[in-house]
Amino acid sequence: MSKAHEVFLQDLMRMPGVRSALLVNNRGEVLLSAGQFALNSQATVQMGVLLAQLSSVAEIQYDKVEEISMVFTEGRVTTFTNLDLMIETTYGTQEVFLILVSAPAANLPTMRMTVKVAADKLKKDRAVAGLRISVSVLRRNLLTRDRLDATSWELLEAMNRAQ
Image (cartoon, rainbow, N blue to C red; front, side):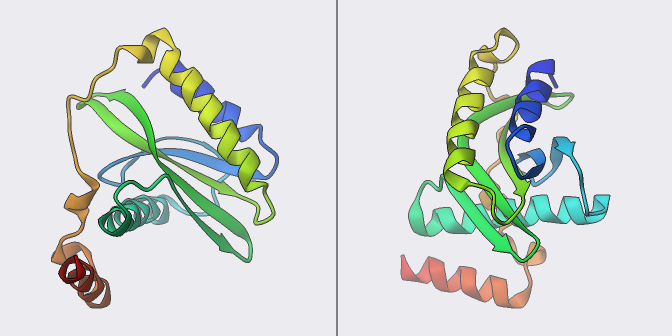
């Protein structure tokens, strides 16, 4: 993991209301993070997997999903899935997506613009520009019966039948 990725996350942390930023691979594993976390490590792992699954389910219906945003009483969780970001790990180069945790009133259009600018800057960095995926994992692989509860599995089956 490069210094460029750390700078990318720190740039995002400068946005008003942003509490944490995470780079997550398509298995739902948090590879790099910055900021304050109210969640313990197990809950953070579960959040990564859940958001990877959620974006995969959304892509069944809508092809490419740019972003998923959920607002809660105490905060907003926004997932940016199609930024084409890569990160080098001990297991090879992997595609990652971004999760931002922010205050509920954080300005979403400003977040979108800042994320796009910061992602473009990251992709132009010399340490990152030449990266190519060497470990390809589809988020859809997380949508198996053993990884979903019964209701989620039924919803997934219904969505597949509707296509």
